[in-house]
Length: 379
Image (cartoon, rainbow, N blue to C red):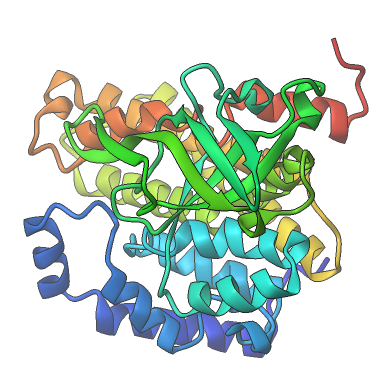
């Protein structure tokens, strides 16, 4: 693995930063806040797609630039560091598209991938259910064959962006008699299909980002299944590795840590104790380790490898950072830090509650690292 970037990669990073400076103006953010759009801007997604950057590492025939996984991570890191609104395209680009490239039919690739790369369609993840969270083998949503269709019934929960999205990347059980891991399939469900109902699920701030998605006799063509029937567990495992890796996690954690360091420097009226200074130093060090691991994952992808426990290591570290930073800042500020005008740290504190749960709990990440990385026995 190289520990430096090439001149072309450095120039690419500079180009992305220049685009963000030009696009994410104060007027842009004011409009975004006024309309309470939590990270959702199809206009920004399309402007980025016009540069070809959404699918930086995708083949040219699918709408990408044909660059490498390192460049894709650079793009994702800079977007996350800038806090760019990526919810319209993020899941489709980061998870769904690569999975379709790996498991999809030629017809699916020709249909979905160019539309994803141009930000014309968006995806929500139909994974979690009331009784299936990190252990998706407990999925209860059923997809029954009827002629050339699946008829789908079930409930999905914590479905981010479903009220905005075009498709649901849906795990459903297609063989109720098979072992739990072997009887599910991955199906792209149009969210405008008859029988789909999206209900809001408000978060701790009262914002509408999550949803319940009710599927009541929803008919979807069998041709919408991605991968083999009853092999959806393996499609989803790869999808989750894509979600946990990439530059988004390291960009977000770097942004958060840099904000914390600036706040400490700008507020000498809140002096740090030796213990707090040590905690902050630990967080900064951990963030540097996560950054290096993130690019190790990108390098592995560039070499044609499939990082699994390596991606879980990045997710585990960045999730810890996501909670440790606001915890430390509120400890330094005291109860006043929870006030609405306390420079956002109270909101960050509340939002960080889900960091060690979303995209697989930290316990799941440790299990992956232990069994697949260290070779420890299960149970």
